[in-house]
Length: 191
Image 1 (cartoon, rainbow, N blue to C red):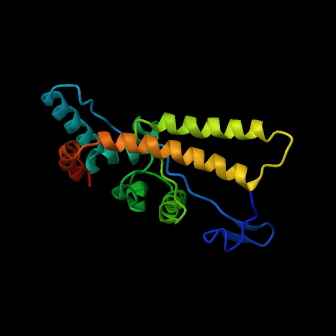
Image 2: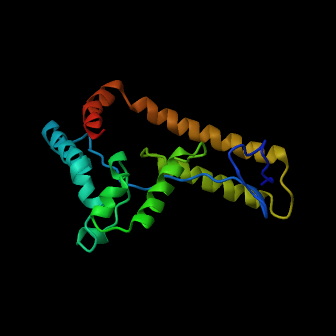
């Protein structure tokens, strides 16, 4: 790790007592839906219709902005659509205005950050995480009791980048145009 300054961390926030702090809001988590390609076309269509219904503006509002004290209130879904970002909708359901303002502001501020970190959403995410874990453990074991050189650090990053690139390229090769064209109409309904 190195000390942040305006050149190294152009998006950092400066604090008088500790200097520059670089942070990256993480938008991981949330909900996703998938439909197995090995089922009949009829079942695929039904599954996509269900997912589209559940993610619709009207239906999702019931779960994201439920009436305070209702059964749904205790499930706690986070806002995931622009239509979930209206403070008045929360206040109408019994939420405190000041707390809701702070909650929605933190989401909007994070999404607007140039340092935003998105969650990896491909089936190979476990492989990607595993490569990083193994590389970090091997690097720590290799450098135990010594100071790692810049070349050692570069070698680790090169190895991780090479392995990640291969995993992503292999995955991309399987994502055909035909599959994307089938998904597009459903995606458009969610907007």
